[in-house]
Length: 180
Image (tube, rainbow, N blue to C red; front, side, top):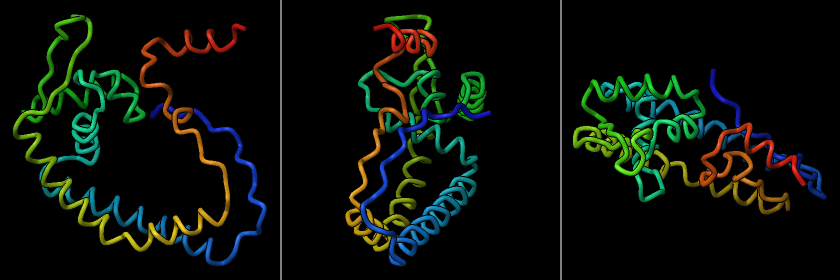
């Protein structure tokens, strides 16, 4: 069962009533998202990957830290439990798409890096996906225009993901939030 992201605070409503154009922009955006997801999943399968394997390779390659991604970080990014991420990593290592090694700084941590084969497959899928996204640019432009008209507050994305710098356990983070 996927882990749930933290719920954002309730956004305050816009001062204006939603117009037909707002609904059309939102509907077109949702359709573009679904079309993109279907396109991406087909592209993954065409190269012999499951969509989740592709997402894992992408998450590892896109990892912003200078240190390689760990299994627990992968689980957090994919919104899955650690044991599910570990099973996914096992399958990717078995297929020679991923390497794992103990961290030289902390042997308890397992670092993940893509193999040459993993990088090549990811690049093929990513090039195709970027082309598909480029073809959807007018939909995104319309949505951005609709959002600008609404004057809604920007959601706190850190609250949705959790602080990537905070590697402590969830109970410890909750305890710190409760203390004055």
